[in-house]
Structure formats: C-alpha cells, structure tokens
Length: 134
Figure (spheres, rainbow, N blue to C red):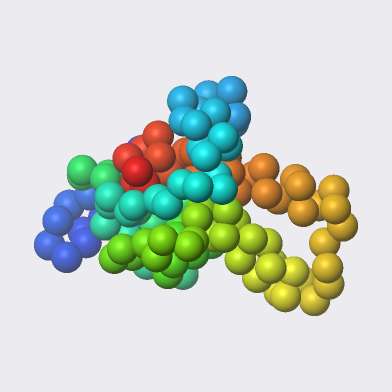
C-alpha cells in the first residue's frame, strides 16, 4: 500500500502493482490456453488516474503500469457492457499491439510482437487473479 485516496466519496487504499511474473499467476495457464475463445467480463469499477485505467476491487485502487492500462482499456472498449460473440480476448491483444506499432511509427519485429503478446497475456492473467476480469 502506498497511501489512500478519496474517489467519489470513498476512501480507498492505493496499491501499486508490480509487473506480473508468470510463475506467480494462478490464472496464467487458463488465460493462455483460452485466449482465442475467452470473452472477458469486467467485474470491477475502473477509474482514470493520471491517464491510466486503474481498477477498484473492494476498498483497494490498484495503480497499474501503462501496458496493463492499455489492455484494460481495450477490454473495456470491446467487451463492456456485453461482449459481441465474434470477438475474443486475442482481439484485444492484437489491437493493443497495433496501437503500440502506430504510436512507435513502425512495425514490430516478430520477436518484439511475441514478447509484447506474452506481456499482455501476463497482464490479463494478473487482472483475472485480482478479480478485475472474469
């Protein structure tokens, strides 16, 4: 915990999330294996904090890194309030990769795309473990 903040009249604990590590993620295998068919549901409130999409679970406001914020915003735009049947979590991953390529003004190499995709899947797993996504 790094402090507290008042959000819409509620006192919340600020919790800074470290970057996820695959070996510590309970949902890693399931998220990785179902990426092409999984249609995530957002279970937590999400607020904008300094330009980042930060989830609230219980009385905790999770401070996330930019990559986690990007994938969470993409999930929200695609799947909230209800997911269309033809779109899966892999679509969100592809959209974030494309957005990063546009931001950088170049195509990523195959190795960069694979590394980034794995980082994004780790972040989705972290959001599942926290109860933000289901």
